[in-house]
Image: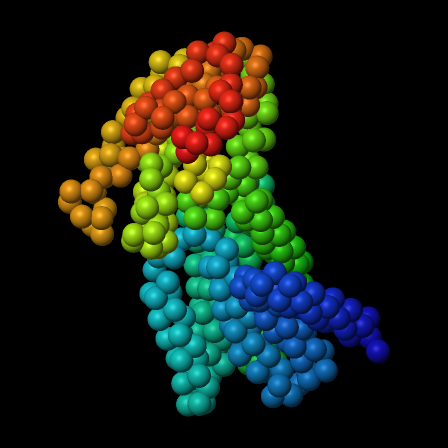
Length: 387
């Protein structure tokens, strides 16, 4: 057994193990699609390496180089496509790639010289990687992972593109498959490509893991219905004291239970999302802290600033006409404002904001009330009666 054969077996074993791990990880992460494409691409790479090792000089070696290679690059392109937000020109790329593959098959069936077949196959592989590189560039977040992935995918694209002038001017139109595939130039390019491909695999898996962690972190901090911060995230932010004071706004939708009872929970959810969209557009830290209860944190704002914000939200929500509710019915919400002093956390104003909200509801709802910072909490029993 030569050293090359032994090395190829090791590479195939590593690729196969990575393919298995990615497949298992994809299933464990609720069928993560990018990981599934990575697993498929690694499986193709494993098969291709084994065929190049044990089927040299047979028709299977030709199949490996001319069929599995573009198939592997197509799988790699799909992986990048799933990772990147840019979905434009997908149909154009697929049409061009499919056309090139169809031409390659037609040339093979027609018995055309290998020179023309390999040119078309290399064009298909180059197109797949060029499209992948452009998608990374268009959706890049300038994280170290994204920049590194762009560089290695760009390098693989250049290595594939470099074959086109080499085939045309170095090998010439009379080149045969064995002369081309066994040449020092092609073997060197394949060796460099293998190293670059391993870097791409590592970066893609790292990117998938980073995105998955970010997704789970967002889910742990965000309300599932509105996308606003949830109670846990709001409490965490409100517990951090800053050098400046600020204000807190508590919001509560008026008579929301009647909306749910009369029109159903689907309409109730639509109303909640409409209100959430209003407070999110203020640009302040906003969260859903209960069923129909919301909070806004306004660091550095005065009680007067907070009142202006609350009045704006109250007015716009009251003017909002939901088609199911009818033209004569209007939605409304009540607001309570509490202020906190420098070096105090926003959470210190929660009781004052809650007291102010209680007063707004007791005074007829659809209004804004502010508590002086020195005001003591109202008795909890009275607050429950007003709610």
